[in-house]
Amino acid sequence: MARKESVTHEMLKTTAFSMLREEGMENVTARKLAAKVGCSTQPIFRVYTGMEDIGEELFQLSMEYFEAFYQKFPHTEMTPFVNLGLAYIQFAVEEKHVFRTLFLSEKRYGKSLYEILNGTGGAVGKEFAVAQNEGCRNPGELFMKMWILIHGAATMSLTGDYDLNMDDTRKLLKESYKAFRGLA
Image (cartoon, rainbow, N blue to C red; front, side, top):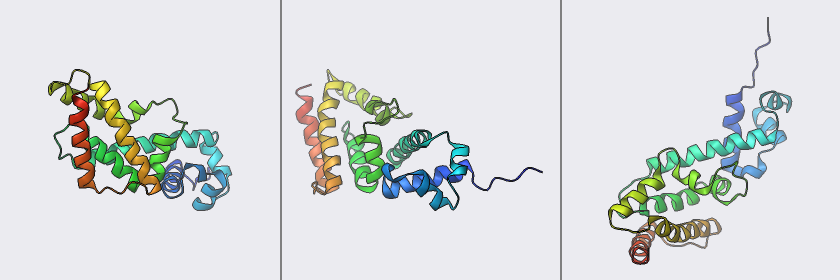
């Protein structure tokens, strides 16, 4: 009778993602993962061909995690890009390590920032459509201006340099949209 494997792919994936959330991608190593799971590194490399495979899977899980966060985030604003901006900034505040993995890493496993943000639900594309329906001639240009502001605020939150609360951030994003829309 074949020996039952006690360390499963699901166990490794779940533990590695938990480590990423708590300690950051750079701290997900085979030895640390093995220690957390309570095994040697051998079962890890039975499931994965190398750490690159684990990194790619964790990146995909991070994308799914962000998309789920965005979908659950209250979409109370009618102004285009405001809900996305608020969710993005809040995600940076609540999930620093996952945010860094997705949005501040050079290693994106072939995914562009736009693909990560747009996700499977087409979040950015929907915002483009709303802006266009409001008469915006160039939603892509408007998005880029808004995104520079949104991304800057989110990254400032990682270092503790962003001190606006969500109401002030909402107001800033709405005012910026109106100002940028006149230019786009």
